[in-house]
View (cartoon, helix red, strand yellow):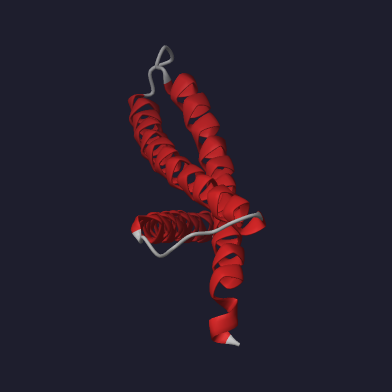
Length: 143
């Protein structure tokens, strides 16, 4: 009974992490595209601190996209090594590579979580940079 509950909650965790990776990757790509589209507009010009905030925001969003892509790849590799470990465990071969697959899966799982948190952090920094720059540029029109 206890094992089924663990497996169920582990499945929920996997699904939620996948969803969160996808949502923040999509938001990062969309925000980056929005910032680049603004740069193509001839009437859009920034100066001073707002220019630095906007540039920093774009760099942070680009990092978020790259980190999100890396997290997706490490996640796929984690699933692959986990599947290989399960197959090796089923063979019950004392010389199987189950330990190697288990180690790789563990490392990739930890790396995926670290990449996810960095993706979330860099997305937040990038979004704040864009909001600061846009509010300094268009704040007078809003208030």
